[in-house]
Image (cartoon, rainbow, N blue to C red; front, side, top):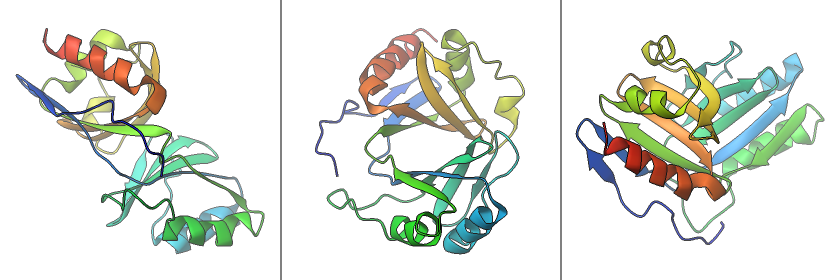
Length: 187
């Protein structure tokens, strides 16, 4: 696993808002189009990938986010061993998908930072820095969107109205965290 200094060194709490980095969490990008791809992934994960746009599915171990008609992000629901970059599920998916030419599996664990946001003012904060209209989104548990937040590409997973997982590329995470801190202090 990448040896790096966490840009998010602490949990921040404000009135009606909390932000913290959840790490280490395994993150994989799955790509494929064929029906056999979906079937093979379903058998490997013991869950179905979401096929409806901007949705997610969750099992006991994993959550899958729909990113495009042929792309999903899979992440672990529990923390993993920080010193090991070898994931059993990645090896299984590689054997069942990549080696059979059904699709691709890419480890993006070190590329994305997972920020957990909780509280009543999450969407008030988002509306100050994003062009996306969150009115319907915030009421749909499990919804997913890729948008800009403070001019930074992010993936937002709405767990429920008061809990959101936000994925941001590691190189932009410190800047986004600073923006969130500054904006949250004004809510």
